Length: 175
Image (tube, rainbow, N blue to C red):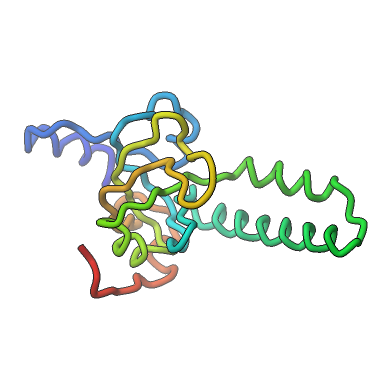
């Protein structure tokens, strides 16, 4: 949804406005969004199990996954007795924290839709955590508690690769 259209809808319907922002904007101005219901646009990774993240874009998702794999390999080498030093691990962790995505909490009523929209540009509607926009901890950390998800297309302002990436995975469990 274009920002102008987002502003016009509440005027037409009389409903309260739900702010719209990108992941980049929310993370850059976290204090302004904490505890608020928002529509956040970004790239949804592969949601399922213990992980679900909303990234700034596809390149950030790929960099994040690559760095996690690098850290896993460095840790394995260190545990196998190979001297890799803390430098490469520390560098990888520092870079990972620079691109850390927004955690998407688990909501049973929304989960089937999140899974179907995984690996696509989306707009998530939900409430930003009171304490952290990325979420803290492990296993489905909640930077945003999702209540709805929909496709974010190029026509609605998504990055140029939005419409020609992974096709939407259809599911019979959409709610």
